[in-house]
Length: 170
Image (cartoon, rainbow, N blue to C red; front, side):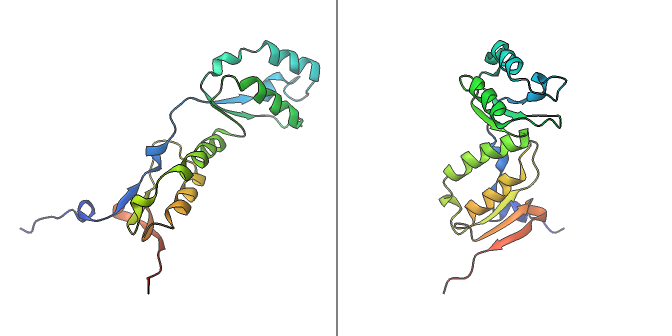
């Protein structure tokens, strides 16, 4: 009987797994509508009073996304005021969803990595992940890998989709 050879394990493929770089920490969404009259109307005096009385220390070392879950028309300063209250406690604050927050974290982190280890190598950007890696992180990873990698694929080694192949050098 012929020996079965694991070609994937023996290949020169480098796996770039965004999950390895997933920033650790608590992610929290703060819904501004909780401080609006019936979730829709911002009364400045009441809004400021509720923010003043809110326990902001509960967000110590959290990554925070500020959003409004209702169709209320909220002035820009409202989110900014919430962010100012959070500033002494939160690690990072953005206006948007948790996915926007994760994308912002990756946008901060990925450009700082050393991609020279992928120089002239075939790289697979691992596709399956247990953590919520946003699509923007995959796009940014490919962008940062492209100047270094000989080729870039997406997925798993057994079923990778080719994305990029460096032009042959003359």
